[in-house]
Image (cartoon, rainbow, N blue to C red):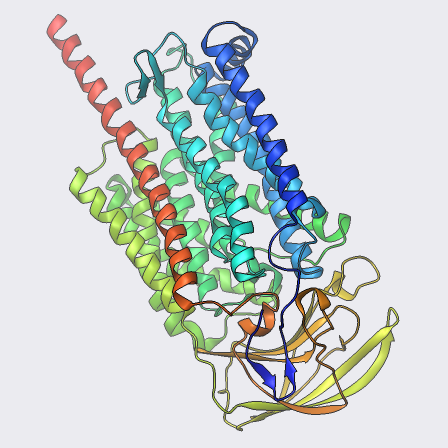
Length: 619
């Protein structure tokens, strides 16, 4: 692997033997294990479908009696809710391990991967269970015909599809690393498959529960707090699931412009909270953000303290919830789509401002004043579009009619285009030409037996950054987790400004062992970095970048320093093609969710009208 030169004598990455995919023995073990487990599940499904076993049907009926839902709804939902948190714990732990330690020795060497795999596999199983369970019945008016006498609920198909989409991300991730090296970033295309499939599966769960609501075994029995709590659990999971796209910001190692963070928060808040408010009623959004806070807090403490990994914080969503609850008092809520658009605008403005107070207090990088014009230009369209999408989802879950097909399809397409345009804008960066920094290091008291330094930094040219940059900081990461590692493998020093071009440290940073320490700048679209210290890494053929007492180095594209294992020695069209394949799969999943919601809405409302007409004629 090779990248550009940092200086005439130092190359960050060279040809090596690691960082390019899992060892073949680990691939064989994982493939074999998946084949065995899959075969067992296929046998159980076959025995159930041929009525040679009855225990699965009895277990489903037992779950159905408790929830007053058909067994093909109750048992899959119980399995899903019991396992999705396992995948989420594994995900946060996995991100923290990459932040604190760096790349894996292989998928089986990372304990977090077991949690993710088990959680996603049971997620897929929950969907397949809903498909397999119905025997002597058509599971509702919207059911999809598989064979002559076998019908599957739409929600089950969507959950299984989302789970399969996420699981496919694992082998594709290995292929991706073999082609392009290990891109240590959450926003790698195959990584987005993993988290996108898990997050969107919550919509499938909500739709499956809706199908069960239409087919209650005892229609006279009123749903109690248990069913409300299950729905709330699913919506709370949706808040968390949609928020994981911004987890890099939670750790303070975001590899993209800061203006993306508020847009991602608005995206998650509008879809999840607006649909929840329409479905669950007054004050539900406040309970959901409290639930999401508790889950994220417990996981953060468990990972940061119990597993001795880098700390992470998370968005609060309280400001968005307050806006949603206040605007729900308006009579306009009786017109959900218009109310959703207005509420999305409120979330993207007032809600974002309230969220910024939390961000400023808890996060590494607060939202500076200079980014607000672009922030609002991105967040407001996404908020309005997300608000309308959330309102349509809430309309379906309330059992009310959607707009005619041409309108709702246009809304979904427009929302996708708006979100894509805002995201693309946030990803556009500029790397300054002929820019450098002169760094003078002063040794500080050593910590845990390694060299610690403070820095005096002068930028060139003097007007390289403006008066209000998003960040000028030194990042030290991947130094190893545990009590003997500062920050459990992560240290971020927000530099203090002395003059336009002069910055100094506020705390010592490590320049020893496996630490990777770099100077990072972001000011508007300008984003760049330079290495201060990089360890010798024979596994990828990377030479050491030393940290002498004084040096001058040029700024380069930040990704070449942060993603040291990544290979840039490939045709540009190849990575573009690979990204387009993943994008096509993602759009297919979004289209499937839209299709499923519309099918359930149309079929059950049509069935209800037909029954009403028959009752009128009979009378």
